[in-house]
Image (cartoon, rainbow, N blue to C red; front, side, top):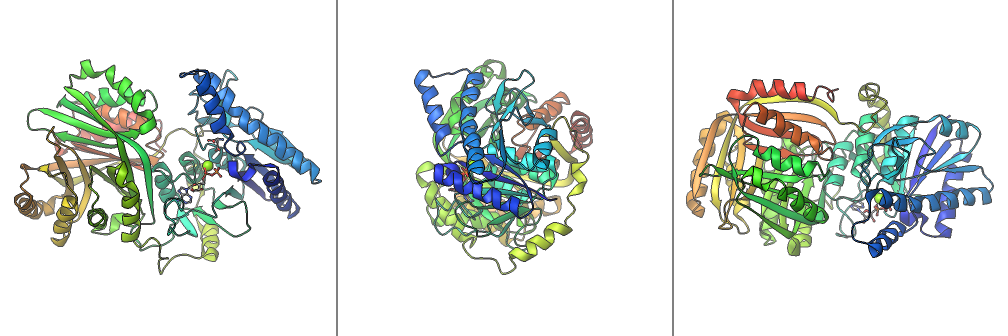
Length: 594
Ligand code: ADP
Ligand code: ASP
Ligand code: MG
């Protein structure tokens, strides 16, 4: 008998009528011959109401009590949904996180799932019940109630689908699928019929709130196909599967996080180990850092810039405060009026000029880019919050995201693909006691790389577009790009990596760019290597970058450039040390390597 997990978000159970509608959907699936597990969120904005209440009691509520409080929202809805099912003549049992055996670690408000016991659910299902499970919550070893983080019911649903070996996981929500960007922010956004796990994971992590990013980690690891669809209609929505929608279009979606903060640690002594101190202090608080840019200064000190969610700025500054002395940095600056705009696409890595196209679109919209980071399937630009809506629109249009690609898969093809795909490989090897443990798929080394850095890049719209168009015209394929703050004069520096064979050509072009825009300095390195740690959910596992810095520092190896995504962490180092570094990392990550 087939098994379906159906998840209903807050808006989908916001009132009694909607609860009845959700109950009817589950009953219908059961009558069609499926076993049905429902995962339900708190009604409407109930979680926000509870948060607000806690805020009225005091500013710093104990984390344990916060989770105790927030979990009640879901408990209300599961009971009501089960009652509605009874009322409509079918059998249902509601269960809390604890009752479904959802074991987590004890990091309140950000708990990770360790194991789920399925016997009780299986028994109840075989007795003919619809099982209505509370989303977002679990229990730790001491039976404390924990929560998985805002939006975490998606993760409960996909995790249950994974461990129960469900045939489908349906996410019922207030949009009829995944769009090329948030349709509330951009009405011209287009609904896609299919999107790949990798793209959805990256988009979710970069601001596409339609799915909790950790749910996609589960889906990818366990090969769970996810169907995102409207709870208010019966139309088919979007399938999240292994394959992308198109094999040609460079970008499949754009995302924005409106509320970001940029932090720069100034004058960090340029010796191995300093980044480690900075980032381990932040990672210890489980704050996910993004857009890390390290500018190797000319005076033996470096400026390290990165972004964090705006809501985590104070905690980040507090963490930094505790290590500033031992780091020996000169000071900290920050800006909390910034937004991050990103484009994501599986085919990006194989196409030239994707970055310059994005930068040109921003320049044409008169948007200044403050920082840039790229990885194999995404490009992020930090812009002022004031210009963020314009930036998103410009980028969406530049990549024709509103137009269906000619080779886009249709609904029938997705289903066919799904049955052919090989989902099994990773599944069986996962340890049963740490479902959300870090999963690494490899550590590899790319030699024959070179780096070029331009210092004193003027901080105004159009410069990045101009630079990367000129590089593109010279047929140079750029791998990594990072741009960030460079000293106190407001200028930035841009570093890029290319293949070694293209270095001479790149320096020529860089010299022209330098002269044209009056940039201060040009540096290059012809003996560098890139170490790549690949896996699933690398950014949300905040210790990955820390451990990498730690191992490299222990070997006295300086990290020249770094980029992070959910799928990879790349570090550029001097090639002399490359073999040693790879060995150290393989040892350090041995536990997590599949
Ligand atoms: P639920 O309560 O059902 O979990 P959420 O509010 O968490 O619903 O997620 C649905 C919302 O996600 C939509 O209303 C939409 O505004 C937003 N969203 C953000 N990015 C996207 C996207 N790329 N595609 C669709 N919806 C998106
Ligand atoms: N109720 C929780 C929240 O509002 C979990 C969820 O809806 O996914 O974040
Ligand atoms: Mg949600």
